[in-house]
Image 1 (spheres, rainbow, N blue to C red):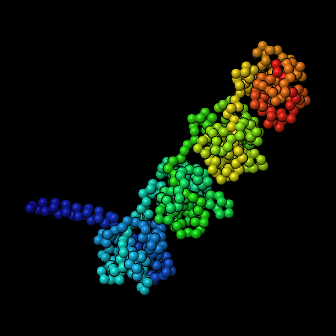
Image 2 (cartoon, rainbow, N blue to C red; image 1 turned 180 degrees about the horizontal axis):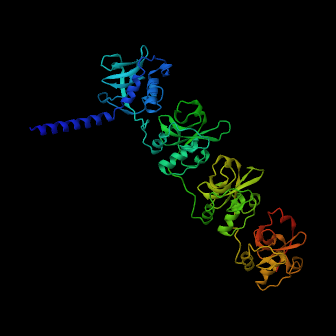
Image 3 (tube, rainbow, N blue to C red; image 1 turned 90 degrees about the horizontal axis):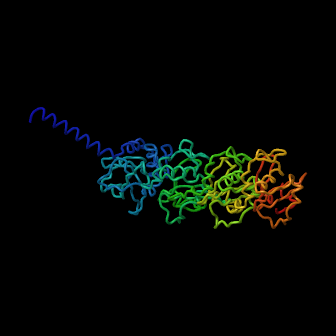
Length: 533
């Protein structure tokens, strides 16, 4: 063999050997075993977890993994034994956990860290932290039970995407309103974030709303990725959500520790507060194809403004009124307590998309809030709390569950445009008020009614007091669309009856408009009479 061939063979052998050695040792974790060696001589202490107080066997491994890998192992050997992947004794690598028995050969009582060369670093009761051999016939050799290799990126060997994602944020700070790693997490915000990033599912951001999703799961059937719910024992309200990791563990955002993994199986605190569990695989969306809901969704994010009736700002009833008029031509009153008096009462079990959902005693006594049911247990509403904007909210939200008053169906309250006088009056909605006005440039009260009837070939007197002399009198309970309805204030005010308690009338502030006089605190008390032309 030539000199060049010898050299080539040597180099090839060198690089191949380097490659294979590097590959073999890439899986070994010397950082864990080397960190453990730093504490040789530290005394043994029952339940000891740091060098200053001493180490128990589980306390040593717990401390070393935290320092070397920033991973929180359970404190006790029995719990650590539940982690990782079993490793044959012949395949041990530095960093593997080695488990030993006590007097009972099947009972795990202690744990050490494999150091290589058939050695283990362990906290001995008599000598503290030491390195000892695993030779057959030795104290530890005879008590050897098994070994586990810990994947510090997936501590609990769970492959569920929710848990894999959740584990990434262990140690992230708690925040009372947090929904991102940068801001920190509240418990429900953590669940919301992990579902979004791992499964692209948009969950609600409130614990009580998250409860409305998924299938109920009993404790004995829990699986990794299930969502656990806990309550306040005084109020019974859901306050905390968490992911079930498996083996009696959960991961959640703790007020004191941020994102952390804890054992709940033997915790009296959490078991006393346990509310239930859900397996959530999908998040039903609201019905965006419904014309009413499609219209309502256009204004998501519009600010809440007290008394607001336009997209520049809505209050709750201003929003429902605006959406119903735009989408369906239905004219609702301006206050939630007035809208409450309309339509048909509906039981919760019979609720349909577009129904109005009412709440009481929110920011004032009585009916005080209203939203539009959008399907899948959600409503769209102008919320005055926290967000102060048009938003979607689950009806299972604990606040709205407590304040729920009832449901009204109003979709049938459309104007009857088959009646010619109704069609003519509707076409003039929004025409401004003009003193003495008798044309679509502007109207006063008598001028509006006179003009509408003129378009149908019927001549009426100019003023309401004279219109009272025309036609035949009609009792209020027998009113029909197209009848004239009169109100008495400083003068007789004429209007056109539109059906279902609604009248078309001229307002000095809003021009030609539709109001429901039967629920109006202004128009109802000044009702005078009605005539049919």
